[in-house]
Length: 346
Image 1: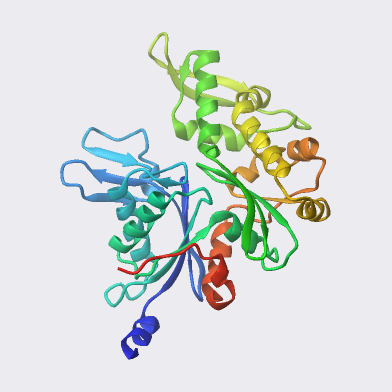
Image 2: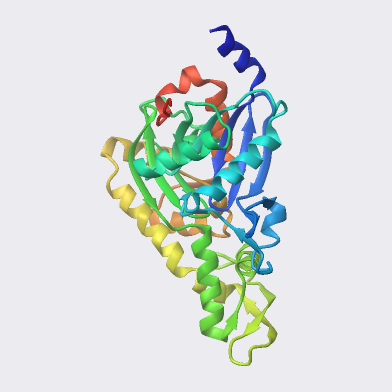
């Protein structure tokens, strides 16, 4: 008992939004201390980690044969166990002041559609990366709703659409639980992929994923803009095999994004159709909250408003809602015990 309380005193309590595109870490008493891309660069021969986060992301698509820069999470879940473990270990070490003393307690946000096998993979990776058991898991939509400041413990329905790098989570939350949920494996990554495919089809030009992401951020939109924009992009000509530059407009990029955005719109429609009438009435009154990096796409709120005829609100800082919600849960575990998915003891 004394040892447990001593360990609690020395360890760092950590809440983590382990995302496909970015990982954010909240430390109890200190707030958000880390926001880095979920990328790891590894030496292929020795298996040694060379870089993690922003430094590793710069290497994506630019590494020599001996180095591999990878994103170990795909569609919100673990695709590469060993590299995810490396990622978790490096990030936990970065934020923990007393590395040498004890294992930190951790809460990890996961997609609401996660399977038991995927849950187990997250827990095992966290334990092997040096976190204390039990590892606590929280569904991302609930964490996002708490991060936005919605009263998740009341009988009133709250609807959240969390658009991440690999998944879009749509959930109606009431009484500390998810009443209806729709989880689709479409997010920012699919948008980048759609832009890269458009460049290939329309211009016979090959562009990298970082270029596609930059195009999405700079001129991407889901709804006609008051003033359309354009930008210069660089890539490789597929016919002649040489580097090339061209200009693309926001109108073309909007066309390129039609499919992934259409999937999100359809998922939202489907979720609204399955919402019980009493909660649907609450949503008419309260509106729908958009969180996650995808919520920053220009005009997405206007498009969803037009489709649903409901009030669509973009959270103040969509990128940090999930980790801030997980942080609140961490700081008030006794109040939020019901939203925890579970953990396990060895």
